[in-house]
Length: 606
Ligand code: ADP
Image 1 (cartoon, protein in one colour):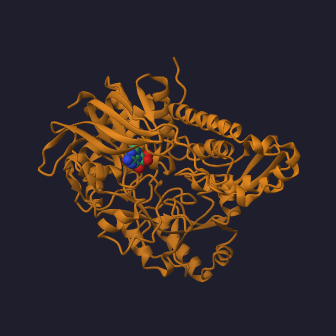
Image 2 (image 1 turned 180 degrees about the vertical axis):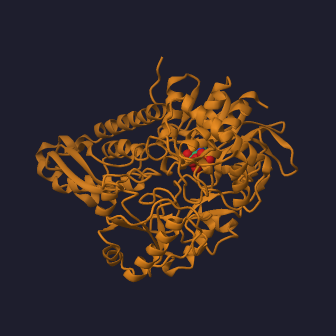
Image 3 (image 1 turned 120 degrees about the vertical axis):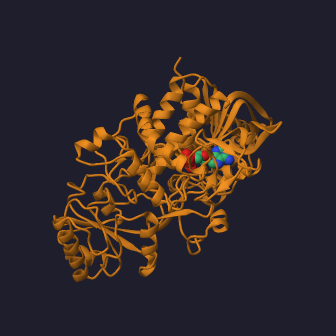
């Protein structure tokens, strides 16, 4: 039997409860609705259908609100362009909550705050048209708790976190014969994978040979090890680089599609990054979700925040969590996998561990809001060894407003340069991420422009790695276009002579195919074909390399180097693989490779 999407099923159940409560609420206040003598005074709205729009993450969100004299009867989203998956919970829940609670003061959905706020703003506009008292409607209403009972489950493998690593572990554990429950604290699965540019490094002779690219597992190993200042564990790196391509084949066996061409991702150092056919990281997450929905035996509990590991006779045998309606206990017959991600969104933790950068307090992050380091705190409870927590990766690629990766106009490393506010280049743009970010921090306002040309965007409809077309970005004021470099320079306020000179010198290096003044060796096309484009970028926190120490079976080690029975970990929550600096494109490989291993080990109860 085909199951409905688990996450949606749970959301629907919650919403039905909320709707029932709201109906009970209406019945218990009959004076408001039946006192016909006072109709004029008690009418809250001018009954009718109203539409309004407000700006969301990716443009306008249009809503229709239906009211009768005394209540909001329906809120519907008519049009929106918000990112698939990420905004779904807000699109589904905010309208329902407004109707259920008859208030505009509903909680925004974590991870989809901008979308939530835009929906609320549009509904506010519509209710103004309906003569609603916005102040009164903006009062938060206390809602009765539905239940406060403890829900208890027993399964074979519990996975903490439903990001890329957690879902890989869940699927793998299931393929190895286990029943699985995934506990995810956010209202949706997907984690950082969903909002990533999705580059996946793997040595892939089939694809690379067609493009004339020489590569080898040893080269990938060497670049990963040396790119991390030789601080990574060589056994784990070996497992990563050797497992990367088989994990691509594993994903493909479940229906995932990758493009034929590989490319060099920012800080990836070599053209071995694979790009999924579906936008952003949706291809990975949809693949895992399809598997989960098509097979019995994996349950995903969203809105379920794990707070404790249950230990019995020194073995981890389950978890305790907080769900929307009370405590959740899940007993694990075989094992528990921690896949709760890094701590890029936890400013206190970043400040506590950071030793590499000047204060990070005011630096934004590319991460989703659930990346708060919970897995590391859980592991500490059982004396797990933690390694490399001081190694925090920044990118020079943050959106100046939000810190997110979206709006990044580069298509790959080879065909673009970075210039500062004077229009001068300042770094080898094919370098390691830490090197480029440090160089950026020394520029005025730690701000730079990515500059490229028609080679990257043959048409205005061409999309970046975040599913945004260059025309859209220009319209939103997030990218600029010029028919000449001088025109572009004027639009972005940099010295035109400097910009022209910078591009000329870059083009010479491409022409001669030799290392340029910054030592750059990764080139392909010249920047010489109009239109020219520029997009602004700032430093942003991206990845926390440190975390739980594991062995090549993804078993968690304690501070004395012993295996902690029943406990496994995978993904950004682990440490020791990437060392001081992670290569671009290695994270998605890491979470698939080690998620897969962790699932297999946990299923076996190794
Ligand atoms: P990775 O790339 O390693 O999969 P992500 O950050 O993408 O890491 O995903 C981690 C997932 O774990 C996120 O979906 C996050 O919301 C979830 N998570 C974090 N802390 C908890 C917790 N305490 N309980 C349940 N899920 C959690």
